[in-house]
Amino acid sequence: MKPVPHTTSLRRAPVQRRSAERLTRILDACADLLDEVGYDALSTRAVALRAGVPIGSVYRFFGNKRQMADALAQRNLERYSERVVRRLEEARRGDWRAAMDAVLDEYLAMKRTAPGFSLVDFGNQIPVGARHGEPNHRVADRLTDLLSGYLDREPDDDLRRIFLIAVETADTLVHLAFRVAPEGDEKIIEEARELLRAYLARVLD
Image (cartoon, rainbow, N blue to C red; front, side):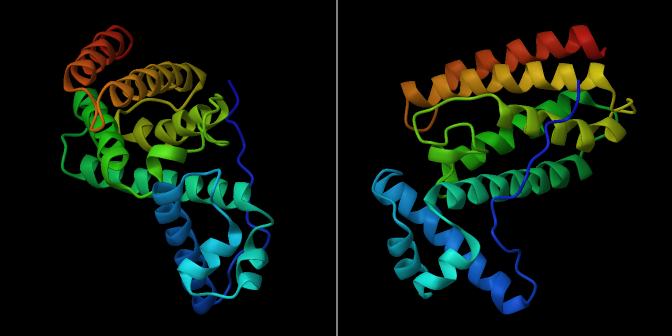
C-alpha cells in the first residue's frame, strides 16, 4: 500500500517571517469565517478583510477559497500530529492503547475546539458536504510514520493497512457522534473506542 502523496495548495510558499505571519493570519481568518458563515458564503475578499491584509496577499498564496480550505486542512493535520506527539512523550513506549487514546482524544479535542475544523477537518469534507477517502490515507500514513517507532513496528504495508482501517472506522463513528450531539454523543464515542480497542488488540497484541 503506497502512501498517498499530498501536494500543497499554496501558490507560493512564504520565505520571510513577515510573509509566514501573513499566511497564518489568512488561515486563521479562513477558519473563523468557516464557523461563522459556512463554506458557501466564504469569500477570499472576506478573508482578506478579516485578516487585515490586501486581497492581493490572499491571491499571492491561493487562487480560490477551495485552495485556502485545503491549506487549512493541511495545517490541521500538522497541528494534530504535534498534539499526538506531545501526548506520546508522556506515555509508556510500546503501549498501543495509550497511543490509540492519544490519537482519538486529540482528534475529538480539535473537533470541539479548533476553528473551522468541524467543516474541513483534514480535508475529508472539502467541498463541504462531500466525503472522500484520500485525506484518511494521508492521516493513516502520518500516524504510521509517527507511531511505528513508538510501537517498535516496521512502517510497512501491514501497519499502514491497520491504521487506515482504524482511521476510517474512527472517522465514520466520530462524525456520527457529532451528528447526534453538537459536542459528540459520548455513548457513540465510547462504542467507537471499544470497537477500535478490540480490532487493534487482535492485530497488534
